[in-house]
Amino acid sequence: MEAQDQESLTRWDGLGSRDISSRTAAMEYIRQDVMRKVEAIGPIPLSSPSPAPSECLPGSDLNIILAHLLMLTKRCPFEDVKERCVRLLQAVQDLGIRIPRPLGNGPSRFIPEKEILQVSKVDTRTQSIFEDAFAALGRLDNISLVMGFHPQYLESFLRTQHYLLQMDGPLSLHYRHYIGIMAAARHQCSYLVNLHVNDFLQVGGDPKWLNGLDEAPQKLQQLGEINKILAHRPWLLTKEHIEGLLKAEEHSWSLAELIHAVVLLTHYHSLASFTFGCGIMPEIHCDGGHTFRPPSLSQYCVCDIANGNNHGNHHDSLGSQEMCSEVEVLMERMKQLQECRDDEEASQEEMATRFEREKTESMLVVTAEDEEWVPSRDISRHFEDPSYGYKDFSRRGEHVPTFRVQDYSWEDHGFSLVNRLYPDVGQMLDEKFQMAYNLTYNTMATHKDVDTSMLRRAIWNYIHCMFGIRYDDYDYGEINQLLDRSFKIYIKTMVCSPEKTTKRMYESFWRQFQHSEKVHVNLLLMEARMQAELLYALRAITRYMT
Image (cartoon, rainbow, N blue to C red; front, side):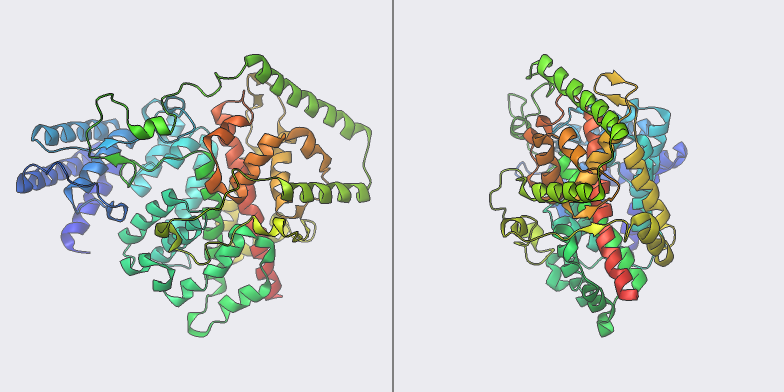
């Protein structure tokens, strides 16, 4: 990278400083740089296109810088920086240069912007977490804003992700981002792919690799097979797959590198589920997040109407009586199940039968509109075999074998293996799993002082059941009592084919519940999926080692 570009990047980094004088100095440098560029080119022609997503780096082209400034006016947690960016964009516009405007309303297509904690109106703890995130990455992304409903979890998530991507570890930085791209691309998650394309280039990654997986080093190409299996059918992963990666002569992976790669793959597969499940919008400064075209006369952007953002609260269209009864029925069932637990104990044979029945039924739950899905060339170039997905095996009657947690669990086996080969990461993942699983505010919709542990366990165990994972001490008969069909369809789609998640599906389950409660469900789905994939990968590695 040229010295001038490096200095420019350093100045942008300065906007994340906790010290106001450092932020002021960085902002002044950026202001002068922008004004120099504006004076050098004169007015931009009206037909000027928006920048391509792979160029969303500050320091190169004026349009890209302006888009970055627009993002800061909406997303920077420091008020002084937001105000200076607003003034700078206004000054540029006053000189006859067209400035960008955001597309869409807020970080999510499913949740009204006013309900997502506004960066400037949050409590001090969330504000501090947002500032740390902004300092580390130079942005406060839409995922973090939506997770901001649950600051305790967000803190754990960001700490883990920061460690995986930026701290000392077996893999080089550009490999980490490329693996993130490969994993997100399995579900055609352009939001995550675009973020990591930018990060990959920023840490010095070779742009040629972005032309397709076949342009990347052989070592990364070999990861394609386990990326595919873990994303869609993790029970098929064997110790032979592991051996193939560890004994590939000059392209071999070390055990430590492989653990790092597996954690990244599972992190981004499950984060793609969260991204689609919450309807996360493109970042303002990236492709699809802004436009240089003037607004239409009606002041409506076509995409706002298409995304339904001009509608009010999604709960209003349903009879409130019907929705009230939904919560009451669920609470009554939880109470009855608790009483049954106290009264009778099913036999081991009966418990095993209930698991097999639920597992078989979960295979038959149809995900969203089950049409053929054709990924765009732009995304599919980052992985092989785009037709390989979750749905095929259940149609052909293939059987998912049962994985007994008693034989291989995260707590007793996976945790220590990760910690041994990639220190501290096992601990961080464990805290994150526990945080999602145990998170509770003891509320259900408008009801307070509710013990929701039975419901949280049913959701977690249903997801693991879809992956063939069985807990011997759990009565799988509870799942059908607590999770209705529309909720099961949402879970199955989000976990197995997240790219098919729709706003209608998000709205059709738990209709009386708060958006924050639905985001909590999505955190549970994400973490349960990640742990399920990790269990299969770590078991295969353990079998190879023994």
